[in-house]
Image (cartoon, rainbow, N blue to C red; front, side, top):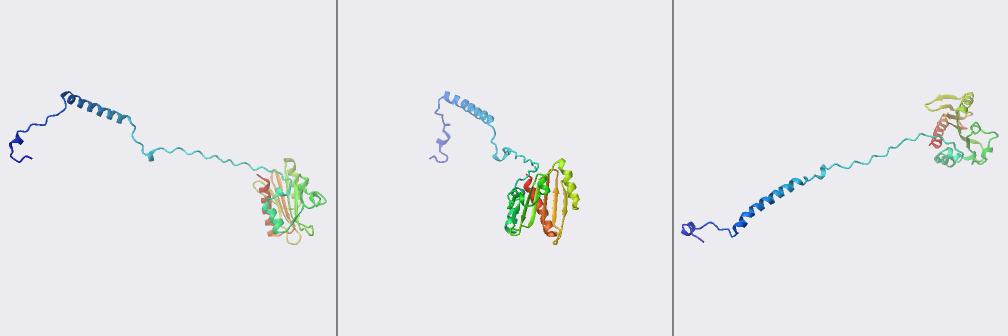
Length: 222
């Protein structure tokens, strides 16, 4: 340790490098080349991409659901003419029996003559009291063609029923009463004829007949 004012501190020489002169000359050049190489590599590498800025892959397009037009299918049995829920209601809650119809107790022999709907190529299904064989609810479905449409409309008009024109159908109806007149609903479209008759008429019975006609429509169009 030197003390302040010591003459040996003023006589000291700068440190002498222990590397040979040739190495001391080449080393700075190597350092420069390496620095330039690192700069070039950095320029070639793409800048880091933030994951949040990457474009998301486009979602697959949802399939287009095309609404299929409803097509009338003529039922061949009473089970095809109404939804199961309505049949269960008739035969379960109301304890009615299928008397007439393809699979009814009396089949097509319940009535002496075929119904107008049966003559048009359709089916008529009659639910009634199993003990007395008296009809309570009658549901019929028949096909309609350009040739048969006019006669069908004519016979319904001749019955003196009320007529209502809807968007896709002509409805012939009668509310009836609780004494003598049944509740009647006939819905005639270009390709089908659906009819419902409730033996006991009145407001409630007529409204139910309208609902049953709508249910038959849902059952035979798909």
